[in-house]
Amino acid sequence: MNSKINEIVKALRMDPHPEGGYYKETYRSEGVVNKSALVGNFSGDRNYCTAIYFLLTSENFSAFHRIKQDEIWHYYQGSSLYVHVIDQKGEYHRYAVGMHLDQGELPQLVVPAGCWFASSVKEIDDYSLVGCTVSPGFDFEDFELADRKALINQYPKHEDVITKFTRS
Ligand code: GUN
Image (cartoon, rainbow, N blue to C red):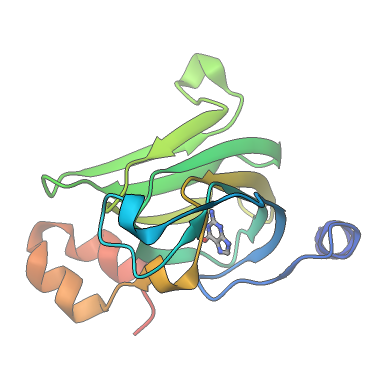
């Protein structure tokens, strides 16, 4: 499995992502939206849209984080991917991005702006290759990694899942 993962990471020229896994930005629109036209407290101008490949392995996870725009996930290959979302009402949902349609999985998922979310690979000893698209375009300025203690304080009933998918 490791050689297959290394092959994909190399072929798609992916880099380690600070939230866990590997990524490669594949698209960044040339067009820019002026900060004054953006709704949602952005710190500056943003490209219209960006897209990435994202690869996660079973032994790793993408830690709880949030961004200021909706994020659209697309399934490509490998294991289905669990996306763990704490929505704006404080409710936890686990969605599976994948092609087991009979099990309720879907090839696309939208994580609404401002929700805390994490992800993990469904199968053991496997990987998930997915895509993530955001509009306005991604900027690390809009990316906030969760603090474990603070998130548990805010959502004590989700302590287990928060502990599992944050790094201390
Ligand atoms: N570019 C770099 N990191 C990310 C990310 O986490 N999501 C999206 N959509 N684009 C990125």
